[in-house]
Length: 150
Image (cartoon, rainbow, N blue to C red; front, side):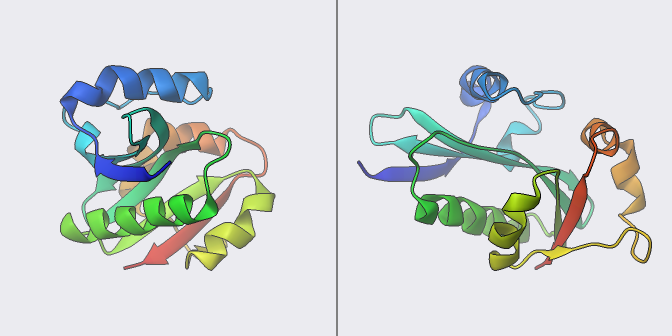
């Protein structure tokens, strides 16, 4: 079955919140103003199969809410990231960041062009520290930050 990627809109809020909640991800900050920074991966019948969101901070974006249903092809995940890079460029971003505590995901993210940050030598953008998501990440053991330059 062919998958489609599209930008989320206000009508998607309920189903997106439900999808993220089923994956045990928070939906704080997901509202009418921020939903257009989310991409949805859907089957031909419109069934939600994946999501990827971004919090916008001036010229920086913080990726969040990457969820894909079991059985999604790697190429669809790559396309989701590729479309997010395009969206970030459209929104005037210069860098994308992401946080993960899953070291097994590092090779995938590095393949996508992300580079791991050493927070002792390189700082996160100051406005990130106002994000609920970032404050949560700092409380998760083994969290790593990665950066992608657009």
